[in-house]
Length: 161
Image (cartoon, rainbow, N blue to C red):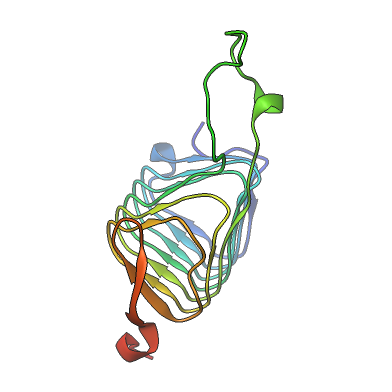
């Protein structure tokens, strides 16, 4: 199921190696680039001119605004208490999941292998270091690093623009 018919694609979206992605029921904005081995689930929204690098997972409940960089292997979560089965041992279905929204604001950058726990907002122009685990909101233009991620600087000091 590489890219299903229910995906809303903006103008000039580039999906590299369409046979090596799993993209369904989502919206992807104009001029966004999506690498190989990426999964974007139903309900996710990706803005315009984003770059989603290979091996990343963007689940239902995630909104990524315009101009965001997602590094290789970035993982988002959408349920704070995931389980495979209910208390009675029956397999959980879609109705048993609790989706908690996550927002990545415009021009933020998330480094490779970062994990973003559901329910947070990553501020505009913020920079999440590679390998960080984001468990709480990140202010606009903050640099965060570590496990759990903590503010270590100001991204405007590292800007190329």
